[in-house]
Length: 283
Image (cartoon, rainbow, N blue to C red; front, side, top):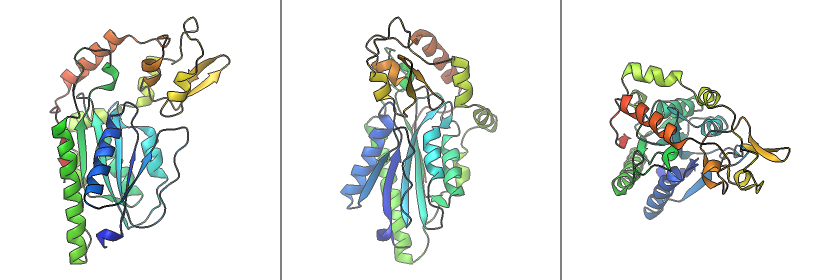
């Protein structure tokens, strides 16, 4: 397949902004190499329409939540047109706790639709739940070195596509077993986790009525459209991913949030994880 016949598209969901930053870095790197690219922000209430049929290289980004890719990202994958002329580059941001099974999960879901992975990346990002901490995990990430890795990723993918074009062959694919980089018992534990279970543990998510001024800022700012008006007050529906963007922007601090307890819990998980706290490419 000719490399220049491919459409490059970057789709991402970025509640805290760091996955968007990587997506923008990838888009800029592709354009500097004279490769046209389109971007799809997966934020919103509805899953965006799938990509048009035709040869495509999809760069797909998600933050890691509870060791998994976010549900709206996987929902988007389920809308992709099936076929054998499609390639993908999954990438995730993670907050130095555990990147879990997000990458193999995304690559497997893509493969099920006929989208074959050329490469993948996991990139450290300041932990989004520790915004009140004076020293959050992965503070300052993604940094210059992380962004330089994205440049390397673009070069590696484009080189594979170009070599395949010159040879009149298919590009070499990523061996998906490379994404099973965690110890077996750790990976098994990651598969057993779920965002749904975490949400049940945390309980209902709604503002305190004695503090809420019904400004609607949280409803408008929710990256997945998970807040609805229930009577006079907003309340999270099943789409909620517990990104806490509503908590962060609320001028009245109406959403209950025990920052100290959350930080203690997250740091405990990070200390128990054997994963090396660094970004990595999988080529």
